[in-house]
Length: 204
Image (tube, rainbow, N blue to C red; front, side):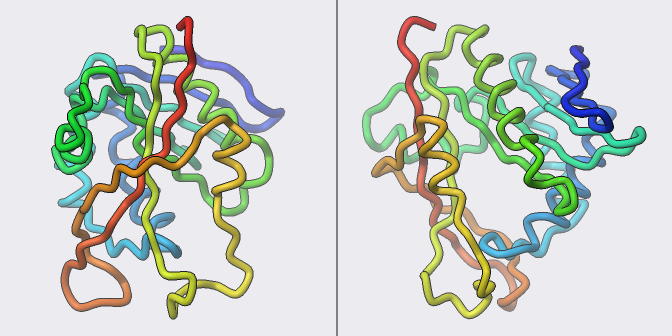
């Protein structure tokens, strides 16, 4: 477990494998709260989160980067080998003939609104990419949900993260996963399409 101060009042805590266990509830809470926003519109439940997040604590090569303010977890960023991720995320790689074991999957980053714009998002990527490199992975990947630009729930002031990701060296690929979840704007579950972004660093 590594601990390092990011700003005067935010501490970033890195946990791997079973060290993640004490932070699963906080991660579930943040995922339910943050991903309720557009574009994910996720109507989450603690029951689903308990199953989904268990993959991380069960994998020795996984990583949680937790942002703490006054001892409270206000943000969590997750990662694990793609081969240990949900099958839905592996499927487009297998169908394209790609070697799943070659990729390190950056799961998601959740940060409460009042802590955004302070560089924590960059720090989340820095820690996860460094961890992937330390494990010998040359390619990191993540996916983002695809939404119509005219979606009825899209806020007037919404700004996508595309430029942020591109500035970090990521590019969108042709790989698309399909995953169903219960949405705030629908009855029951909806199947969503998610595009993968990738970054390859040679000489890791």
